[in-house]
Length: 283
Image (cartoon, one colour):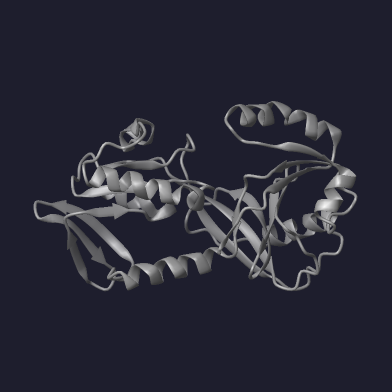
């Protein structure tokens, strides 16, 4: 009940912007994505909160969204705990491979040794793979959002503003307005002017938006140069496996990645060719 398949609307202000994306939409259709054009009046019937700035739209009914990413993660963690999975929380300082297994050193001095370790640390994963002799071209592509609990507007589905490059998603914790792509590394101080700028843009399309109160957030997307994740066994540490680098699509690709990594660990034949996701492509 956390997942809703209500589709998504990709919004255009101008005729030119709508025409410019037609080749992209036709390619999506060839790859199995169903979509249909929606005119301005029809658009406001679907989403009455939208103002007159939205003149064209594309509806993708296969699109889904969830209530709240944090709630989903909390429920997954609770489900795993109920099945006997133990959780140990700490900051990893170093990882090394030994004859007895992978050795993980935490910041508090604790050492964990295991015969199978999966590195799935998002944008920080490259720091660990480098320690194991697997250099990866991985960078933090930071995004920003603002979640407004009492937004004053009601949306049924995710709205993607194609020409302005941001998104508004109705969550159980409020309306989340997010986007941006900032390459500032892992340690740069967040610039929440970016979050506020996105909310200001949203008011162009959602004239009834109440933007006086909201929770600002910034997060690190793990970006690779070819936009493909790393799903592989380490080439230098046989006890270590990799599952990271999903960019903007971590939640979307998480379950599939979990299955593929399990196949690698258990020496099963994966259902797809994993060579495009090899860590050795960065060597």
